[in-house]
Length: 396
Image 1 (cartoon, helix red, strand yellow):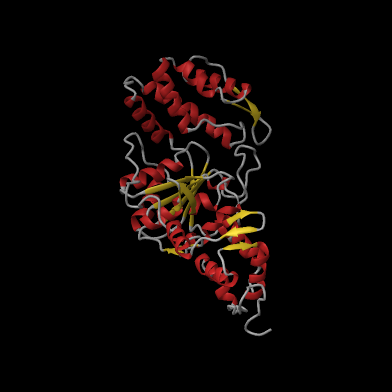
Image 2 (tube, rainbow, N blue to C red):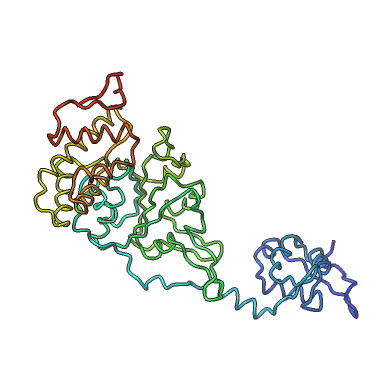
């Protein structure tokens, strides 16, 4: 076949269409493509057959061009193509941001009730260094993983962008996409791009719930920035940008049923995190400080005996949980909720009852009996409903 093909359907002259090289054909803009189709067809009103003839002459795939022109369809087998000027204006609009990235501050507020513990110091050292060093934090629920990241950023006055993952979170949620704003279609940056441009800390919360769509972050986890396929932009990480992930598991799924929805993550994704911190519950001394601060903020001054009882109670439950004697645990978050319930009703027994109703009947009954024993209300030992690792009943 020669460099052009005679097209007999245009009255008055024969039209030759030069074939473009493959790389040029793949990258042609809609404006240039429309110019070629109109020149070939002699009109902006094009039929499906006319489009097929053009594709055959120019070496394009009809399905590709048909898909690119779907918004110009006016009826069965008919297209009305806009002028190149209008198309260029539209393509320019599609690359504009919706919100200027410098227009608001995302630095968390300092929580005066927070007591640093666990991996707080190490996290602070990483963030303060300014180095890109992806970090993974794993631990049971309610033990301050997310809050530690927030408070490190608050103290160091660093912006923080938090993403809460579900299995439905996809590339558009993370990177961004086309949105309809005030009647215009514009490309809006997602939270990942915002963090990259700002040099913020990007917190991937509950990241073990993510599907394999999270793999769109691979190049970002290498510190190499991101190419936006839909706009042709390359986003270079601003100084200070870093990624911290929090999860209940280490990305290997959960066989116990405690963390339903936790997925097995891709090994290549997990391996891009430089370090993994294992976050435990605070020590009894630290947990006492946490509760005292919360009781004081709630204007409950005579609280030391309550604090001692609650911390001892929670510590016994956690040690029994670690030994396999029970299947549930009282978290630090739940202790704070009990303190707040006490501030509302003024009755510690009612506060514990309401805040342990989430457990099954046997477990909540044993938890309440154990608190009665710890507080001195009863003297008999409490038997837990589940056996220990060697088959013995756990009792205190």
